[in-house]
Length: 177
Image 1 (cartoon, rainbow, N blue to C red):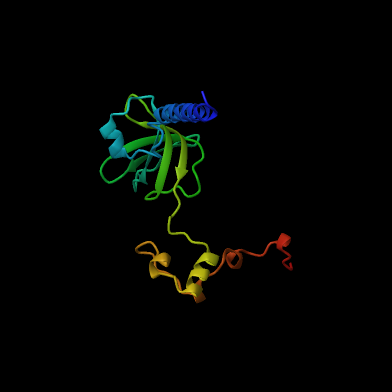
Image 2 (image 1 turned 90 degrees about the vertical axis):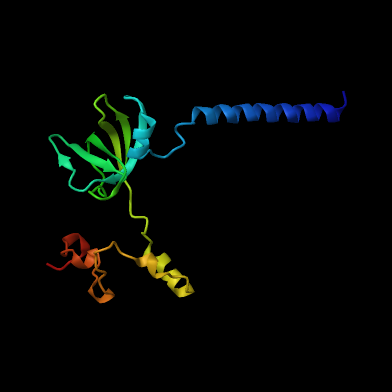
């Protein structure tokens, strides 16, 4: 056997081992690749009780019920289906009705999603002021970038106040008392 034949056999064998390893990893992650399932997808898949997955959707308005010892229940909807969620713990600051949420947990035997982690999805329209200013200077700014939620009037720049302007002076900020 020549050096070239041995080299080709080594390269071919290495590629075969790599292909088998990739196939095993992808097969193991087959159900985990999806970031979250919507309530409609959960109903279609008939996910068994006890199987862990991520549930994503909007918190249905008027469904948030707070109980004792940080217990919370609410409904997650995708406008096609709704799934009740139960959670015990501190909710994220951005969590509110009508806002996007991703909860991690499992269904119980009664069809309630028992979450052990709740993540609030932030507004995807957010853009740092520096980036917005740079886009305006370059002429790439689109009015839709600054669009507000429907029904919320935008304040003119002259009426906007920063948090620092709204906060009362504190002794640790060097305020004169």
